[in-house]
Length: 334
Image 1 (cartoon, one colour):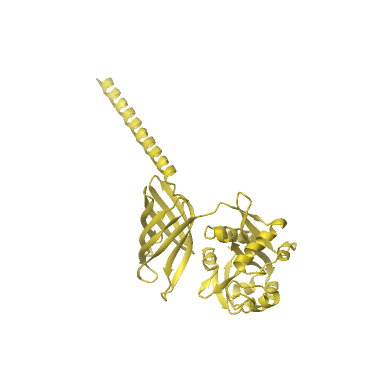
Image 2: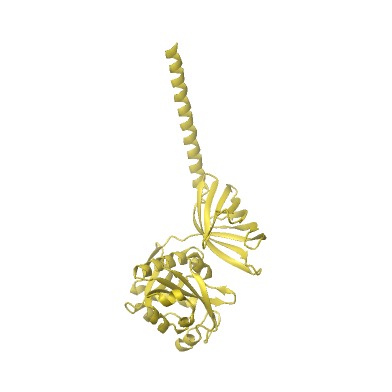
């Protein structure tokens, strides 16, 4: 009788175990098929409308990483030192909907997300929620663009023409010359290259002593920064630009991160970059903040003398002189 009971228990355990594995495998297959049919996971650059304390409308860009299990989508997004978690469901009709909330319990940010997923995986929709910084309910447009798969590497001499072409369209005619890029040892130039070997963006930079930095860029000498004054070697980020077709897909982020790392390896203790200000918009403002740069000072007519001397055309001002201001951003090496 005891042997029979043991046998029944063993059989029950075997069937229960088999049932558990069957359900697990079935669920796993179903999730896999759903993920293959409705792929949402991946890395994105999001753009969302927000407001500052004065009520001015802003466009903020922030990286997003989404993970997927079947129709359940979770993720994380961050801007500067703030991070938000995302918890959404995917509707097979082509919509992603759910909530976002601040990772830190000290931040009261909380709200809703509704996005329509396009055939190429990009998303467009709205967010609404409680703005803890301004203490009010708010909303705005919310878009996700998949990051571009590209390699970051040093520019080759025969690629200088393409780099200058991107610079002319994004930064102004004659702002950057091939001779600037081809002088050995003058500066670093990294390019973003797609699998078809087309160049879609670039970044320039150099390591300089404090004295050389002030000699090359005299207006930076008036910037009040004790850290800049005591740093022996400064990493200066010159230009970051991406062609129009591939903007908003993380190319600038990857270029800037690679440039910072290379300059750090070359001994940079402190990093400086300047952002071109057009009206209220600073062209690299969001990019700088995402990489832990902080604005130090705004300098009026920063490029005026150089534009007249070099004869380059500003995208905003047109023919020289350039009357745009520059915002100086800086960060520590660590």
